[in-house]
Amino acid sequence: MRVLSGIQPTGRFHWGNYFGAIAQYIQLQGDCNKAFYFIANLHALTTVRDSKRMQANMLDAALDLLGLGLDPEQATLFVQSDVPEVSQLTWLLMTVCPMGLLERCHAYKEKKARGLTADAGLFTYPVLMAADILAYDSDLVPVGEDQLQHIEVARDLAGSFNHLFGDVFVLPKGKVLDSSAKVPGLDGEKMSKSYGNTIECFEDLKQQRKKIMRIATDSRPLEDPKDPDTDHLFQLYANFATDSQRQEMADLYRRGGFGYGQVKKALADAAEAFFDPARQRREYFATRPDLVRDILNQGAKRARAKAAEVLARAEAACGVAASPN
Ligand code: TYM
Image (cartoon, rainbow, N blue to C red; front, side):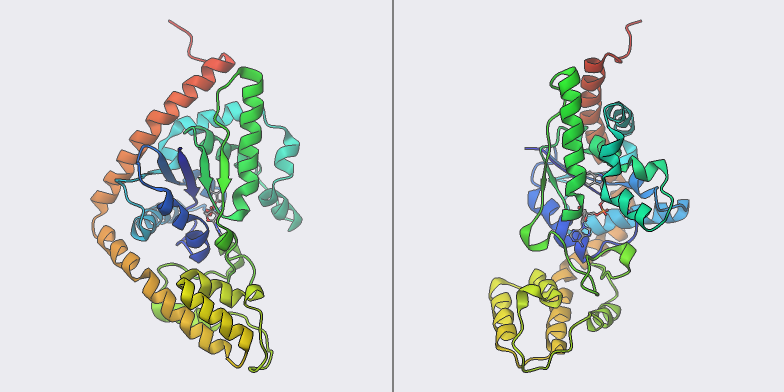
C-alpha cells in the first residue's frame, strides 16, 4: 500500500494540521518507498506572494515535519516543485476535467462567496492536487476532513482518464481520523490559519498559555453538568490526553462543579508536555541545515523516479509520448 500526503508551507503548522494530518503521516510511515510526504509550495503560491517568505516557510515546514516525527529513513520527504513531472501530469488531467467539478469545490466557492476574485490557480488547484496524488500510484491519502472533497476529484479524474485511455491510474482513497478530522480553533470553528484561530505546535510557551486562556467558552454556572462531546475545549484536551485522563475529564464535565479555567490549565500542561520531545528534535534539525537539504534532495530523487514512471505510462496511454527520433 502506498501512502501520500501534502501540506502547504503557508506558515508554522498548527494543532489542526498535526492531529488531523501529520499524526497520521507518522503512524503510516515505515517504508520510505511507500510513504511519500511533500511540502506543497506550488499550492501555497496561490496565497504566498513573497519569495523570501516562501523560502522561509518551506524550511520551517521541513523542520516542523522532522521535529514532529517524520523519519527520513521511514518516509520520503520532498518539495512539490522538485518534481516537475507533477506539473506535466496536471495538464493531462486538466484535459479530462469538467468545469462543473471544479466549480463545486469549496475552496473556490468560499472565496467567490466572500466576493473575492479567484485566479485560475485557485480554480484549478484540485487538478494539481489530483496530479500530486496520482503521480505516485498512491492508494491512501491521510488528511483532515476539509481535503476529502479534493481526493474525490482525484478519483473522478483518474476514473475518467482510465475510461478513455485504459488502466493508467490507481484510484486513491482518503483517510481521516474520527477523533480529529476537524480540530476546532480558539473560537470553536475549524482551526485554520485563515480564521486567525490557531495554536501552533511550536508556539512560544507563554504565548501558548495566553492563547489557551482565550479559548471561547460559554457562561453557564460552575455547578451545571456539561456535555463533553459538544464542547470544543474538551475536544482539544482529548487530543492530548491518555484514555484514562480523557475519561476522568469527561466525568468531571458530566458531574459539573468545575471551572473552564481548570480545564484550560490541564490543556496547557498537557500540550506543553506532549510537544516537548518534538521541540527538541526540531532544534536538532534547525542547527543542521545541510542535513535538511540532503533529506529533501534524496526525497526528491526518489519521488521523481516514481513520478517519471507514472507520467510515461499516462503519456503513452493518451498518445503524446515522445516520438521516436
Ligand atoms: P493544508 O496545507 O491546508 O493542510 C494540511 C493538512 O492539515 C489538515 N488540516 C486539518 N485537519 C483537521 N482539523 C483542522 N482544523 C485542520 N486544518 C488543516 C488538512 O486537512 C490537510 O490534510 N490541498 C492540501 C495540500 C495538498 C495535498 C495534496 C494533500 C496538496 N496536494 C495531495 C493531500 C494530497 C491543503 O491545502 O492542505
